[in-house]
Image (cartoon, rainbow, N blue to C red; front, top):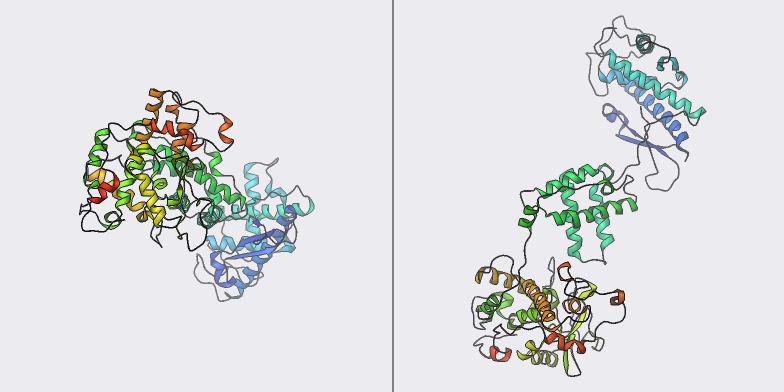
Length: 580
């Protein structure tokens, strides 16, 4: 018998509790499968001894109750159930004339009775020690003691019983437990128990904890992405206790995801987001006391790998548009105000259909930065139209509920994405300044520039500009035949190329300006030979004055691109249907 100690389940006491599992054969008699009792001491050594005493006393009570319910004459040998002690006569004085056949439950019953006799706990340690004794003498000592005790409790065992070796081993373990319990009382260093760690929560218990931990600090999509990784781990190893997950389990899980037939993970995802998520989950579990073992990610000294060729094949590339592709786009049905193929929001919001690609081309914003623009994100300073990519409303806006529509939250990828820029001259040539002034004159501050970009209420994962993004992706990929790797983000890639070209042709810009215009903090590794390196000065002050960088914006050239007609001229071609 190994004593299992646990802390108070609710943490309201410093005393140790003994956790006792009731054998399945006695569940009906005891009425439960698990019992926990206080040892009334915070001292672990004393708690182990007291726990052994409590467990022995309870097992004695169970054995007695089982005996009271099975006083009928013993029938054929039973392997389980409440009749475990059927083979034991009701009175030890009645020694059967014939040996009984051993079976596992009977062996347990004999050992349980030995543990349950506090008055007979004296242990002959010589039978448990091999010092100065031969193997045969040692075995004979254990055998005689086991047979003798079985006879004392009126259970005669035949010397040639096939399960006799199992009985002797079980009896020896029982004697050792008795000896350790007695030693623990008299000598604090005398006990040697197989102590178990306190119980820990299951993997599934961490999902609400993690969601609560991340609530308010990151968007719901990021939380859902992390929970998806955790759910996949549970599907692989099962909803097991947190402390049972090993580094080997993590390795096998990551290897399985790398080689999955359906949507396998990339090497970058495995080495980055997946491992960070798992490490954070287990760290959170330890911090909240849901597990006591080490974080298995701390012992993951290597990770599974795939070949570079395979990794490259799995990546979803994003390509910049060529000039020919841009000219094809601007001459396509996307820019036909009378085209009838459009459905839903793209059929009516001609403003977004027209301005989405030119804004994305001339300033390289991420699709969300462009689609969530408000009319109050624009102002004129020293005759320069400025565009601010931000989350908040302008400080000068009338912040009354009547003047500002209730809109879904706007989001940016990072703090570096906040920026104020002079509007590119090409957009001004297309009539963008007039379009902004019209919106500011007709609508209160804080009105979306593109109404169709506002997410629908009650959506499961509301996202600004989803209708535009998906419609545009399908159009260039399928209708125009550009294929995979092209979408609105391709404008951003082309913009970065044009920023490089501008510096090669006109000279290197002030340090950090290129990153500022595109909403990055640091240049990519490939650009470090072109862009001037920044120092820690980037963290000081308010950054570039927008009006002063107008001449650099004008250096980003699109002379070869054939743009559509100016917005008002293009809109005038619209016949028979309303537009935004």
